Length: 294
Image (cartoon, rainbow, N blue to C red; front, side, top):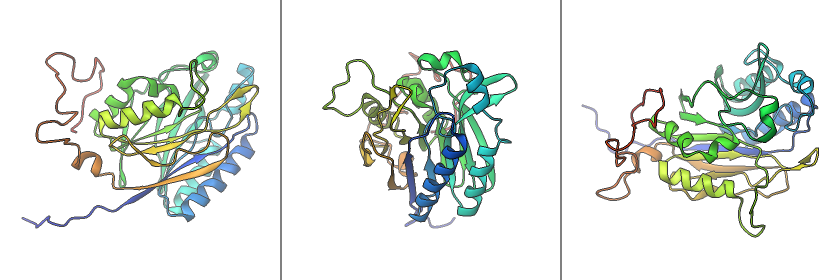
């Protein structure tokens, strides 16, 4: 039997790119994303998160415009450009993209690594006028096994549902990466952090997960966006910013993803996932997904 004392898992640098896509200017958006990705990689980031619909912009006027800006995954030009830089810089990307699948559109996130395409998430809970353009996601909440850790992902409004985080946690995720386009919501106190940030922190804590949320900034066709991208520890406390509410920027955090599992016990008696009362409520909250180990 090998002696495991002193075993050290390597630290991972995470980057969230807070940028301002321009609706309809896909070539410009992708080029800008590549500049940010290169800058983050230059600073040692190996897991990089981009905002929701980073390639297309968000506020579509017509279905024709939405279809024109969407592309297939993984064979479209945006995925090709992201796969190329991922291979060149030995990095992993989680990025929001407008996906065309036959005659159907999805608000999706693509996961790409140094060896190419890894997987797709399709936004499960559509927000407001997204319902005019996209279909609800049909791939569940997959967790992707990678050499740097187990990566779960979902998009923006999905984070208002505790089931999203919990289903990732029960499938063994170490981190949830969230491409997002947070907008002001009713009752928001201008002197407080965004409600989205509060939800991220609480959900990271109650599921013992790292969370990396990359938001966008700016105003698009009259719709303002909140910024305040952040990276949160499994403890629930921010370890990367939050970013500003107005500026394009990159935020970073250095983490050991193994801590999400190794340090999950809060005391001698309590561990949040182990303490679930599955005699009272269903193991996977009614989902058909088979739970993994945790």
